Length: 384
Image 1 (spheres, one colour):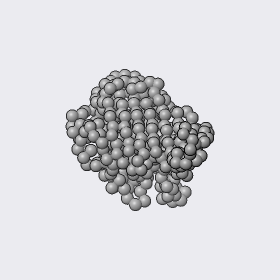
Image 2 (cartoon, rainbow, N blue to C red):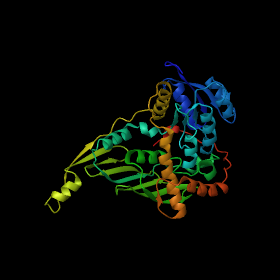
Image 3 (cartoon, rainbow, N blue to C red):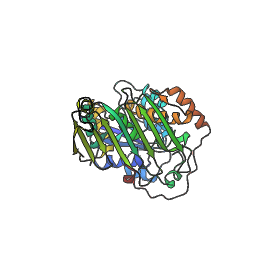
Image 4 (tube, helix red, strand yellow):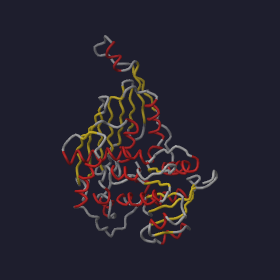
């Protein structure tokens, strides 16, 4: 592909998020990239409005020669087959999260990637200036050694209609899970992106506690890190209005995000040094607190797609390479496995063992019949 080329992009899937990507392309939000084809199992009349070839079979689009790259924006259970087809054909691939139903599926897809082939995942929250700011401060050592982490993310509320209008969501067969694989996969990605992967996980998931579904809609997990730090993660789709509170505590300070504002606390001296040296029985290190909330107005999805195009055309480093999606998926899988087997799960995850346990649940699972309901859809309200 020449230096001044434009990436010809095919969008596979025409659901809510796929249409968001198409809107970004049509609105000029993504540089160096143009919509070249669409694909959905049915041929919706709306596809005609895009003015590009439409396919009802993803393999036909992949082998049509119309595209340099594809976006896979289809139900999770189809990610593996579509991704494998595109990767084997030599196309560049940008996949909606998660990379598959399990870490084993993700590992198998990554094994198909060829040198020079861009394979990215839509981990769009890595483009949120707030999380970027947190990461930069941690990497600079401003907090010192991290000692405790805690994220309560329960404002992913979903009403029953969200599940009723889908045949695949919140089923073992269609999604491989619920809350952890769909909504909280973003939070788990950011959690480990900032704080690193824990050494072990013990979790307690509730299945269908708030909704008529077979998978988890609430989860509480306890993490232990190799350096002795601890962490807690709480997620739910059944709580309203819900809470979004993220704390990262270090020896020299702390970051606290309350869902709106980000504050930085800095200790002088560090906590452990003060504890060792002070003679004040009830003393505390001097702490300075600053509001460091950045401007967050950025089109995260367009940013990931633009970076994907730049990686193809100019070799720019991917913001969210597909391989990075394995860690958040491993956390979600480990939390489910810990609940199923009532034990602490060590990481790295034994992906083969997890796959066996998931397969047992898929064997007794089925896609549901969609309810004949006209749902009101505002995609902007789905982002947290």
